[in-house]
Image 1: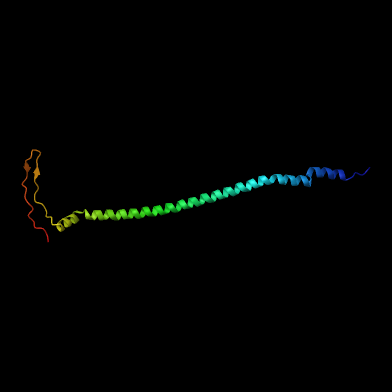
Image 2: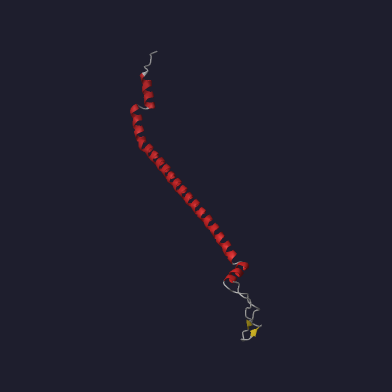
Length: 129
């Protein structure tokens, strides 16, 4: 039997595996695609960074506005309490005395026809000094 040469098998393997020149060419063809993917990922990361920064800024503004709202609500409650204290009957009577007013006597009412119902009397109490 004649011995076979190992060269044909090597040639077949080289064709199946591809030559070194073919591999270098396919790598060069992939470079724009890889570059595009890297750029898209970079842009995505930058977009996420800007979104996160704007959300944080909005959160700080919201926190400041809530604090101001609470301060204004507290001030409103204080003013309401102060107004209620001034409009209490005892406070009004004291202020009237300070202004020299005296309590009125029994009231008299005017009827639609012009007649007077009740006996009008002047205030008789002396104002407090």
